[in-house]
Each structure stands twice: as C-alpha cells, then as structure tokens.
Image 1 (cartoon, protein in one colour):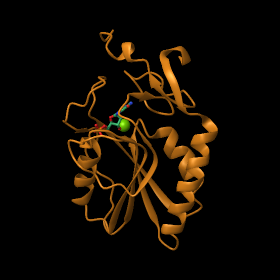
Image 2: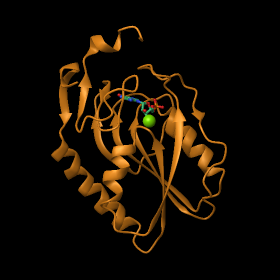
Image 3: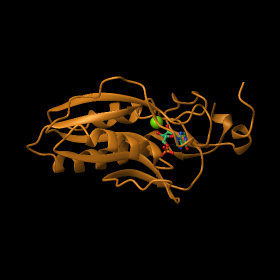
Length: 182
Ligand code: IMP
Ligand code: MG
C-alpha cells in the first residue's frame, strides 16, 4: 500500500504528538463539564480512539454514520444519514469529531441536524482541514493539521474503502484517483 502513495505527510509519531496537544486543549476547555462526543464514522475511527484515550474526563461516546462520497474522490454534495434515530443530546455539551474537512458539506449537514436536537453547545474537531474554497463554511474549534487540497489516505481515511488501516497519513498517487472503479 505504501507504493500507492506519492508521499507521507504525517507519520505515526507526528500524529500522536499533535493528538497530545489537542487532547490537552479539549481537556482544559471542558474541565468540570460532561462531554458528549459524536464520532462521524468511518473515517474518524482511528482518530477518535487515539484522541479519547488522551482525554481524562467523564464523557459519552456516540457514533454517526454518514455517506457523502459514494466511493468517489469528489464530493457529491448530498449527505445521507445511515441511522434512523439521532443520539439524545438535549442540554448536552457536544463535540463532533470527524476525519477531514473538505467541501464542508458533511460537517455542515451533521452540525445542522444535531442543532435541531437542542444541545447546550456544539463544537467541531477535525483531524485534517484542507486549505480551499468550501461549498459550505463550517466553524471548526480544533484542527489537527491544515493540508493542501490533495487527496489523502491512511489513519482511517480511505479511497474506495481501502488504506484506512495505514498507521500514517499520505497523499495518494494522482493516477490512482483517475482509474475506473473496479
Ligand atoms: P466534505 O463533505 O467534502 O467536507 O467531505 C467529508 C468527507 O469526505 C470526509 O469525512 C471524508 O470521509 C471524505 N474525504 C474528503 N476529502 C478526503 C480525502 O482527501 N481523503 C479521503 N477522504 C476524504
Ligand atoms: Mg468521513
């Protein structure tokens, strides 16, 4: 799989060092409060597991599964929620965790939907944020790394459901993006 990458952007130690910083910040900001973490699956799986183990606060964990990509490298704009009921977050301090902010469609839809469930507060934390013009602006409170507008995989992030298990994050070779779906 390493051969499919153009280059590695963040290796395991770099990711873990950054998680130490974000976790410390979140732990400080939510001291004396009880967090409800909402993980946006599947991409955020590794990030959530590694980040939450660094946050020594009482918290609840809920998972949402959404689809916006349909296995392609470009966003379709439409965001589909894969569950019928949303977590009960009335009066709760909610922290949304997602892998990457790209067009903004996914996080804008997730945030909007959760807001209708009357939480006390909502913040957003993403591991990666692409520097680009977005289809929808999303306010983010915690960002792991800002990256250029390139397609990245690994550490939870996939291309056509592959590469999620790479322990590092890298840029996928361009020519692989343009290959027809098998
Ligand atoms: P957005 O709705 O365009 O902001 O994209 C959100 C979702 O698209 C993310 O949660 C990812 O699952 C996926 N995505 C966006 N950019 C990338 C990328 O560079 N690599 C892998 N997945 C991506
Ligand atoms: Mg995702």
